[in-house]
Length: 194
Image 1 (cartoon, one colour):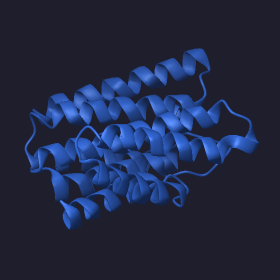
Image 2 (cartoon, helix red, strand yellow):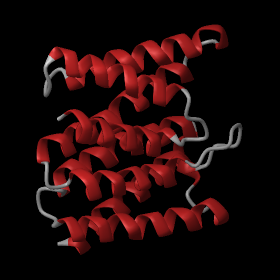
Image 3 (tube, helix red, strand yellow):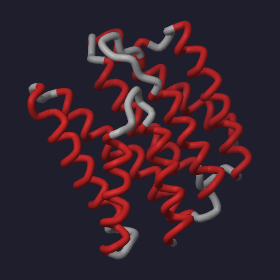
Image 4 (cartoon, one colour):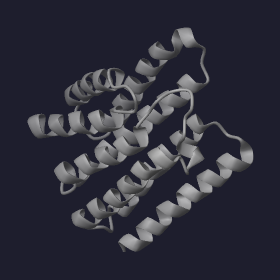
């Protein structure tokens, strides 16, 4: 099964890479597309993979993305105007979720949703805005989307707790490290409060 998963993700990355090269689409946009569709794939494929298979597949992509950081083969992931390790830390975040929450299905899915949607949508909003409002819009949109997702799974007081902690962590994590720090904070809050 894990070979099918590997193949499906390779197809996704090749498709987005082709779109990037043919359309001259911004790497910011292609990264966010991959962010969301990778998360959707994680939720889908986690129904069919054991925890060990999931970790194995994630480690393979982690290895490939570390190589891509040096070789710069996937242009859809390369951003020239800022330094980021987001594609690698995204996989590290998935490893945290798989190690700590894989057997707790609802929290695992909630964690993936919080990892993939608020950051990607807030990032796209930033991409299309002028500089003076970027931070404010990013914080607000991230917090709002995190609330809308968590309230589907959790009582109001816990949802607000997650929003406060994760928005704080997101805001103070630079270089794409939020893809690691948000899953870590999320998993710790789940362990401490749920």
